Image (cartoon, rainbow, N blue to C red; front, side, top):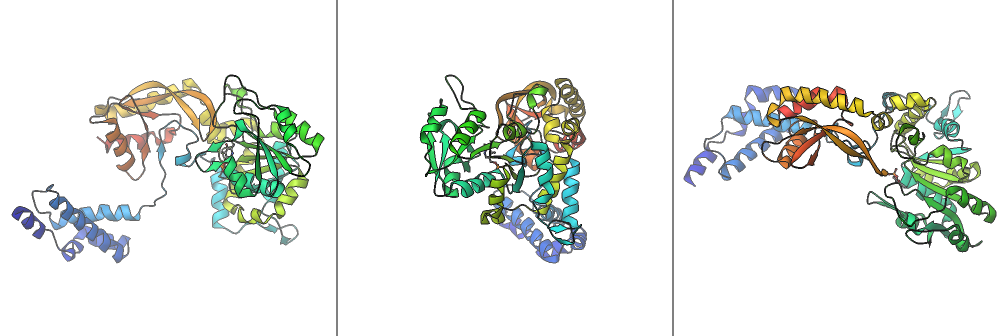
Length: 464
Ligand SMILES: *Cc1c(COP(=O)(O)O)cnc(C)c1O
């Protein structure tokens, strides 16, 4: 105790730390109040270390100043920061889902910094609609008569249900009562929309006759098909193809809605990935409205897109919820730029990061892993970097049954994999987020841009 007391008494005074040249330099960079808080936080930290018995000598003012500098840097750095995604999960919900293509990011930047034609018709010099900018492109690309964009796909589904089903029933298969990432659940969205869920069929089998028997001219507002985008029911199963549902809906005068979720614009099976229903196919099959996300397989900004019949979407446009769920100009700009790339499928596959990362060849991934591994063997030989063959999930609730073949660099931790993984996240301003498997840390190269390899090595150097 006496030793501690002496040490505590030896802690420099706030004014002495403030007088240090290093802290004086900080006063140039940040307001005095922030510098003062950083100095106080540094001294508090020192006091706690002494009380915990972690220090045997009293800190000098210069040491406290260095700690204050680090505290200030932490206080000034943004909370929403870039990370290096070394998980291999292309659509990683926690890491921001789809990475946008440069053209989309630039369009968002221009819309953010300047005035724009957001709701202005420059040709006529009068008021325009924010929904016009992307509608034509969406119609051209999907074959739909009309399209609206809202905040996200959850909003799109809720909106169309609110307009068509409120106070009435939506008929849904029990095999399609989807939950996405905790907060989107078909029964709950239905309730919020004011619609009544009319479940039909069973978990594994639903027949067309189940839907037919549930239709009532008074009560039924719509037939809703939900793409089971994040799970698969296998074995003794049956679901009703969209085409058959459309035929039934047409016969009975009930609109058919399709919550497609993932929003694929291209046929992934052409490129060796599993078949995902595409938006153009679903429109062609005759769904009255197809709802999908902008930032899943489409690879654009967060948005929810409704594509379908003009008569229905004109009604949706007038629904007051559309105003509440409306998208920002940056989103519209980024979405327009993303959709523009899709005019040429080869360009989309090359330039839209979500597509290009999913379609990377094994040879390319292997070559990237070897490049990164060679770099790390020089930078952090103590972690014994090695290339390993790996499998990854697509993520973002897309292609659940598909594991992609890929490559990673494995690191053998000096202490534990959990400790190394934690240091990778916290050592630098840019977190390096990897994966743990068999007591090793894996850096999966599918989602690390080769332009990030040098920084990956620099971060790891801080972790050993
Ligand atoms: C992802 C998904 C949603 C929710 O979309 P968000 O854009 O995340 O709001 C809804 N339905 C299905 C089928 C989905 O896959």
